[in-house]
Image (cartoon, rainbow, N blue to C red; front, top):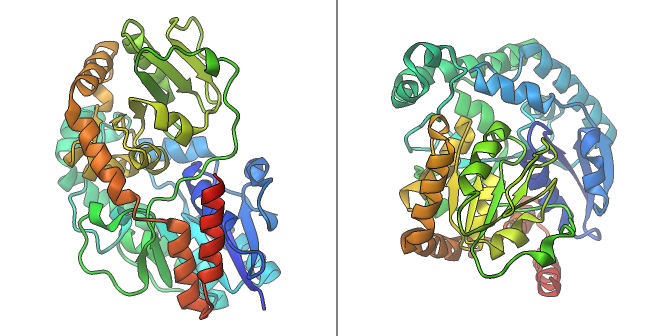
Amino acid sequence: MLRRILFVGNGVTLAHICRPLQLAHRLDPHRYEVHFACDARYHPMLESLVGQFHAIHTQDSHDFLAALAEGRPPYSSATLCTDAEEDLNLLNKVQPDLVVADFRLSMRIATTLRHIPYATITNTHWSPYFRGRYRLPDMPDLWPARIIGARRMAQLAEVFLPPMFARYAWPMTQARRKFGLPSLGILQRVYAEADHVLYAEAEEMNPMVTVPTHHHFIGPIVWEPPIRLPYWWNALPDDCPLIYVSMGSSGSIDLLPAIVQGLANLPVCVVLSTAGRTTLKHLPDNVHTADYLPGSRVAALAALVIGNGGSMMLHQCLKVGVPMLAIPSNMDQQMTIAPFVARNAVLELRLASVSPESVRNSVMKMLSSQRYHQSSKAISQVLASYDPTERFATFLNTLFGTDSAPFVAMNNAVNAIK
């Protein structure tokens, strides 16, 4: 009998779509019936998915990122209740044996009410078992930052974060109460409340206390749609370092002009992905742009990557041993890069410090030092020990009591072809 698995991606950022999509792509269709739900605007990305697509509404990305930048809860209780009703209808339609979701907070309400096993994909810093120090990036739109400055507010993160976290958790408490469910309390429980928690990171990189048996480190999940290289790719010079720049779907796109200006007069070749979010004009001769680029392929050829520090792009470059100059603009990005900054594989450039001069100096510092490249190479060896699709197969094997060996063999065959 085929086990029916419903994957759910939250369209507020691309990573929350790509991570469950990567796991869904590699499942054996002879063993699992795959269903994938996300906002209809991402449907073109699912062309190669062997499974059924279900369109659901998700919050507008711009509104979500604006709320984070201003320190407001990204979801209201009304939105969560509406989403939960849609989730209940989806569960009634699909009748899954398991739901695997990435940051679809309302799905926990629906799966609890329908008594369906639920697994959430998340990052370790959103776990109640995380024991690292929480940090804030420069967030100039927060009201305290307007008074004392973004840098000073970041320095006082221990003061501002507890009330901020409580404020973020409150809408979920209200929504759960409307469905007759108890409060989860702290924000980390809201984000990691599930029958099974799948950490999309390497266990060695993050300070955690001993986690329960239903928490699993499956490793960094990297996926990208099949994208052709642009027409100018084969004409790029091969006698200078390649710098790959992308602020992704959630970074500060307004920084690109300063980054481009900072790289303009350096002896480097710059390839820049705008993620379709902006159009840059009057570019220097050493800068080449495209809406989208095959990130893993480009990162493997780069000497350095410049990005927002988000999980997807960060692990794209570290998996191939390439360091990153990270400019985080929200707390998730700030926390994602933290263990790699400490290990000298990532250099952080604070948002408030970004200028052509600071970008130029940071890039020259990283290119002239072997420390960053040696550290990123060492981390790539740790990350290489994680195959998230294989670990996910092992998780399913434990959950359903099926033999995962055929899946692993199929996955290895696919990787060999690549």
